[in-house]
Length: 176
Image 1 (tube, helix red, strand yellow):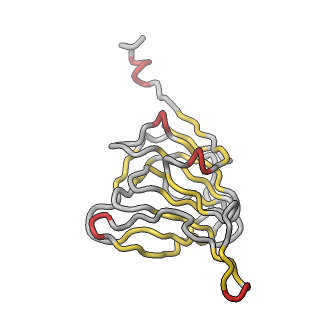
Image 2 (cartoon, rainbow, N blue to C red):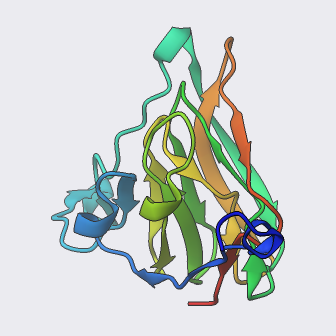
Image 3 (cartoon, rainbow, N blue to C red):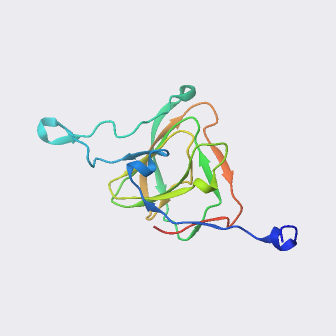
């Protein structure tokens, strides 16, 4: 059957269902940004708690600068077709929701292109953000609500955006 037209027209479809995220299963892709299980430093005469060093921002490759932005994300519909992934080889990229909500991430390990056998999707719980390591493949922001995200990433010289396109309908993301 391999040499027939039937074999050539067969389309492999990969369906990804998100799993709950935790520090261990997300470690190779980046950091979780959360105050859970972190001992705070009491500041401002006891009127505030400070949680330090929640993720590893890395934007200095090729003399990049760290910038803070707000992305206004639109709610996604599921199941959704994943037509591409992107990576930022010169800097990390952090996403912190600006209201109580969950959101999804869709990632693949570093490499010349996304390894479809190693793609993962995670549900990020309320009061948690994420920080992608430089070079990690990911789909752009997947918000379950129309909302804003605080984004910490790199600005500077060099090509810090690589895009890989999949065949239409090759990868489908289900709702978590």
